[in-house]
Length: 390
Image 1 (cartoon, rainbow, N blue to C red):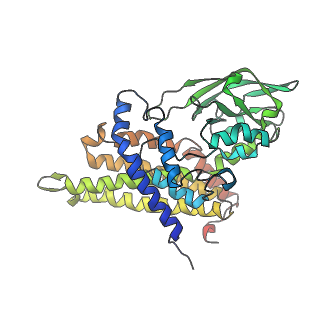
Image 2: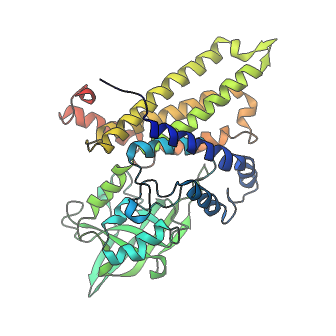
């Protein structure tokens, strides 16, 4: 028997998170839009931490964090559901108490210095693998780390690093054995900003503010290697692959909210003596958006279910990311069109979502990389057509 219904616990959490987002986060949307129009940060200093503290009182802290570190250990399916609810607002809110998954590969000393303070919100990290010549082709990393006694000296540049301007430490990937390259010659280092790396903001078309990181003779102790020397590329792929389904999960929440806006506007906006909801073109936009939204929802939940049940979800996650992120881009375009001139203004959040959602088709694996992955898996026989039902 195939059961497509959410369990009682999943439904309860979904409803509780929606109430929190609706009550505590959405009321900030007008202020966020005003702040951004005036060139100020979306949230005032400390505002995110205040929201996260409120969420903690509700019991939502460390969604993916193991219970031994004070988290919920919610699992992939619950995490996808929560991400969908959080995605219903453009306020840059995220639940606290989480840390990058690869930090759990650290030694006990590293966990005390980096992992636990990050979970508690006292430290902030960033993940640095992308370079000017190594974006989708992560195997082309050029940043070098050369051994010098008990230290390593790192030189290189990283670009488009999320949290790169705010982080006080970085998980940076550098080549330690050029002959081996990605096959045993890349190492991950935990590097405090105080050790000498610098960051520069990169202006973008959206509100995402990545950083360019510069490493010039940055000296790092050998005990700051995360994991094993030469095993960094494996850690990087673990980081990238672990939560790829979470990207379309958030996009689903945004698309759902925007479709609701479109329905309300179509029913209330009159043209030529009748609601625009009566016009076939408007109905087509709404129907197509609803169909694609539901398709993306089930693709994403299926990928999350596979992760939770220990099934190799790389192929399914690539399908979910490719379809889900493109779906959200099509939905925001249709919804903006339904709103006409007002949709194009900064009075409504649609133009902001229009710019923000475009990023989802690029970072953590471009559309082209997802298509290559999906096609290669099929052509080489790694995955069979219809295997999702096997």
